[in-house]
Every structure is written in C-alpha cells, then in structure tokens.
Image 1 (tube, rainbow, N blue to C red):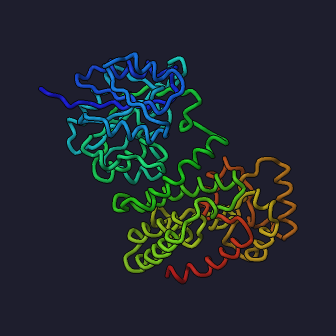
Image 2: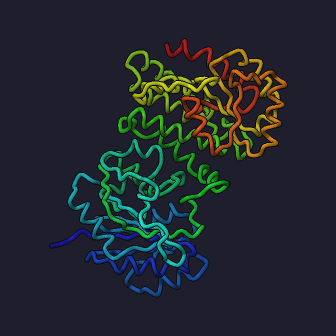
Image 3: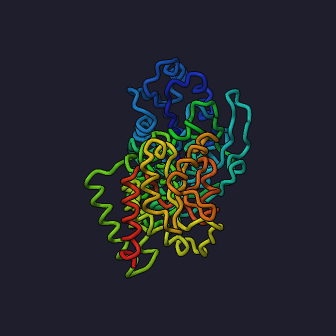
Length: 452
C-alpha cells in the first residue's frame, strides 16, 4: 500500500548549534515516505557545512537572507509531498511524530490541518514543560476554528501537518504575517476543518532567541508591535461568516490592548500606531455606516462584523468602539455586570506619559466630563508611587478628586484586566491628547442617536 509522502520543511538561519539534531530527528521518523527540505536563509555560520554533511539524504536550498516567512515559502514551493509539515532548526522530534499526524489526516478526510501538543526543552535538551497545553491551560480546539484564531494562535508550526492540496491558500507567506503557523492555520480554517490530536509531537527549544513564547516587559511590547499588522488583517480581510460576534469582538479587544501597549511604550497616541491611508479611512467610514444600518434593520449579529472592521481599520476611532461597548451584553449573551460602587459604565484609557507630557489633556477632561457620572478615565502605565502622587495632585488641581466617584483611576498595566472587571466592562477606547477628549465628547453625543 502506497502511503502519502510527508515533506518536512526546515528553515535555517545561523543555527549551527542545533540544526544537525533537527535534521537527524526528521530523518529518523518511522513514517516510510519522508522528504526533508532544508532552506538555508543566508547563514553566515557553519550551518551550510553541517547541512552539506547529510549528502543526498536531504535537499538543501540556499537563498539570500530574507527572513523566516520567505525561507518557509521557498520550502513550500519546492515540496512534492501530499502532506506538508515544518520543523524549526532549533527544535527536534520524536520518531513517531510524522506518523501520528499523517495517520490522523488520512483518517479525517474533511480535515485540512492536524496539530498536536508540544514539549518545552532547554538548551541541553532537558524537559522544562512536558505538555504546553496543560501548562498553559489551552484547549485542544477542532472543527472550523477561524473565530478562535482571531484572539490568538494556539497551533505551533512544529506541531502541525497540512494537506498540500491547500497550499495555494497559504503560499507564499506575506511579510505582514506575524507567525507562519498562525497564517497557515487561519487560511486553512476558512475552508476546512482543523483537527487536534492528544499527543506531544514537537520538542520546542526555549533558548531566549525565540521571542514568541513566554515573553514579558519590553520583549512583549515588541511582540505586540510585530503582531499588530496581522491582527488588523485578520479583523478586516477574513470572511466574518466563519466567526461569531463574540469571537470578532474578542479579537478586537486583544488588538486594542496591544495597540495601547505599543502606544504607551512609544509615548504616542494610539491613533498614530498603524494610521490608515485615505482608502482605508473611507472603507472604515463605509463599514461603520453599514454596521449602524445593519443594527437597525437586522440586529447585533449582522452589525458586529462591519463595526469591527471599522474599528480595526482606524486605531483609536471612538465611535464604532462605543457602539460595540454598548452591545456587549447582547454579544456575550450575559447580563451587563453591575459596576462597583463609585465607578462608571464607560472606561476610557490614557497613558500616564501622555498625561504628564500634556497636562492640558487632564484639564480638557475635567472641563468636558467632570459633571458626568457615566465615564471614568483610566490612566495606564503608572509604575511608581511618586507618579501616583503626582497624578493625584494634578487631578486635584482640576477638581477630579471627589471621594464619592471615580473620575480618574490610575493603574499599572499588569492590573488592567482586574480593573476592567471591577468597572464592569473592558476599556472602551483611548485618548492621547486634548483633541482626543473633544472628539470623544462629540462621539458620545452622536453615537446614541446614530445607533438608534
């Protein structure tokens, strides 16, 4: 009986320390039909020499350095197998890895992609985490999972196998795709089922040079910066029919959270991060109008996709975010949580850096909103007590220090989720200067009438 050939694509760049082990683990698979393609992405260390030592057992393609996506695309173009799979040059596999995934694909003709769990190892190959799924509390999700992928990726490149018949959907991999596995998974999930298996199929090496696992602080900000263009594409280019309203809004909330992190780190208004061109701005305006029309004529489920597109295309645009915020109870299917005493239903974010850079922002806030009991300003990025003291003094100077109300709340970034829960809803939008405050006031005045 003829079995499908599995093409193993190994992108390599300056991994002389581990690439031999990766290649050996691919050649040692117990699946009878294996094609190993190593793409050397312009390495300047001993990687080319090490790859050459395997002779005819593998196919080596050398190309000028172009990055991981370009190297992977080169491997995809060269692959001849019915099933395609990927191995990072610093990772390794057990001998049954390809067999487990290939047998799962053969048994599930409706599945376009199958994926498993992974083990985390250190630089010496010692186990740090036996099951990434269990350690992170990740559900093994299957079926049409596009909506779930809007919030974040849960399918690792080293743990997946995909049918080559779907290659045209994800090849070539564009530069804006943050991670190759996330791109492949979303493109496949639009047209086919995704199947998880309960097996560890990859040994992922954590050595500090791979930035997309367990990072924090400045490294996490850079990860957010890397992901923003792709998250924007996910929310504005994919067919929303494959996602629920709740999944779309969840994806937007994560996108906005990353926008705020990058804006805080750069000390810039959110609206300057990924600012749209004129064509995108026009598309956003049309989408917002479409969403409001659908809300009036058809209800929430029909309105949310267009509203999310409008919000994602224009970072910091308040109006569509306020409409979505007002629809949250119906979108989530849960009653609106009662806000804590002295807090308000609408929470707007601002970075501490922006407040101290332009005190007129807080003055404009006091002038515009101090008489309203439905809105709270959440100042993020407050890291030291002295900044809290300075903020308290500044707020008091503008009369924003009432003990019976939460006009201004200062919070460290790591506590944002808890503050959102206490306020009863997520942060709705962000302001960066006094002009944003004026725009917000106009939006709050206009949205209820428009949405009605």
